[in-house]
Length: 112
Image (cartoon, rainbow, N blue to C red; front, side, top):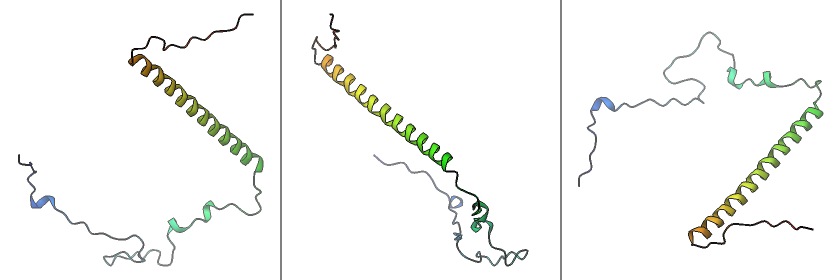
């Protein structure tokens, strides 16, 4: 059996020129003359810095940490419950598929 390959014309093959972003001057000889000594805005991170005299909001940070911990504990508990439930359902299904009749759990409460 022959494999079918699409017919490819020469118009579909295009070589793209790779220009690295790390070079100081882009290839092609184009240079921006409007701001010759200006640093790029992407490298300037000073706008994200906080002033040193501004204090750290410890209470807000601790509340965020407690909320993150509670969320993580809740997700872990839900994951464990789900895994146990799936294992129990699988055990019951295996029992039924083997043809047994005593697969259902009967919970008995003590009367007294």
